[in-house]
Length: 214
Image (cartoon, rainbow, N blue to C red; front, side, top):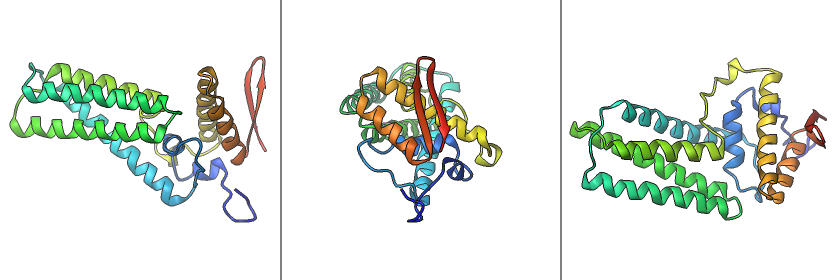
């Protein structure tokens, strides 16, 4: 990125239009070995994709509020599908931290949640309680690993200012610390480099990581 080429972005500029969670999702949606394209089109795409996951989360909340029942042949098969999607997600993360592939399995899970919700509502039946619990557990687990939808994201207009920038930086630093803890030093270095590209300098100290703006 270079200011002279007109493709230089500062974090605070991006956060005037996109909330920190969208930016985080955009970053983790790209494999850490691949270059990031901080364009409005790509960021808007990430925003829409995150909204799809958020909608599935809300749909899952509706399923959780329904009175539950025992399994059916269809829901038993779906339980196995949920297990397979979880394992596929974990395998992608073990495969050189392939977050892009892992997130594709999150969308597959979200699709199954939406389809099952529609089937339950259309048929006027009670959902399989254990299946709904599995949906909840796996959806929450994958979101926690990726670091999204753990809390409701506030509109960007309400979060303008330095607090937004600090929140994002702390989020990325936490991702870097997790990578170092897991001995994924390539990812840790890549996150440091990405922060440097957007004007954030990290300093590792005995008291922890300190950061400053260039």
